[in-house]
Image (spheres, rainbow, N blue to C red):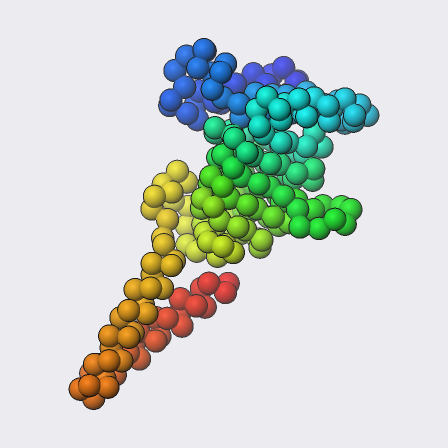
Length: 233
């Protein structure tokens, strides 16, 4: 596919990905993510053909205008949509495959100064939530989603959800609606609920010496151990 057709497809994809886009005027002034991708397409071609300084200059100007920092050497596939886009950073050796959705404030960065692959690989149909940081030479499997403000430093399997700081992978192998960020589980809430229930049971055991309560405590301990095991995977 030629450069013009790639940019045309990026523009068309914006209308498919965002129901708020209703006019060309709106598109022109309120979709920096789409324009950043378009300028990346141009700069990437120049970079591949040896015009590296010119490519960096174009993306530097793009950063000033859109506040989106994309290295021209990064690899970005088809129909990648950066929604809102403010503060997005995409590093030099990042690979983004087709049909990926990236929200504002996302960093696809590195954790090493060594040459070679330093940035993440984002596979097909991944959704990266607002403010998420995906760091290092790791792979986010296809159809996965990264919760908002999560910090991901380990591989995420396909069809999974990663949330938290550092991010833990949950719901492995389940491809739910990728846009339902409000349905992501709250790990901290679940942990506090466990602690409150555990304290209440122990208080009753001390006061009443009730064997039934002791059995409930052992059952709760089993649930806790399963929870901790899933977080370590």
